[in-house]
Amino acid sequence: MIPNACTFDYDVRLPIGLDKDRVMTEISRILADYPEVKVEELNANPPSFCDPDHEMVGILQRNAEMTSGVTPPPIISLAGTDARLWRYP
Image (cartoon, rainbow, N blue to C red; front, side, top):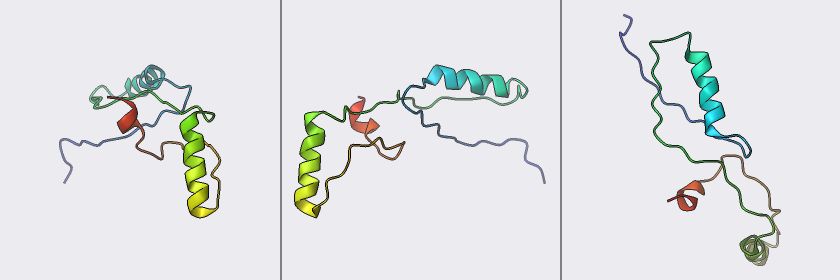
């Protein structure tokens, strides 16, 4: 049996420096050969980051060091957090 319809969800995480419009333009270009495919954007947040020299980073590093004895380096976490949930209203 072959279904007459199919839906799926996909999640694109944008790295810092890449904007949604550029990605959506490329998706539209690819899907131009498939006019029956429809795209519905449900949610979009621009990529963001914290300044590694921000005061809060130092506070978190000191707390981690006091708790574990290890000072974590301020690195970028590629789409590995839900920070967007408190960054954007």
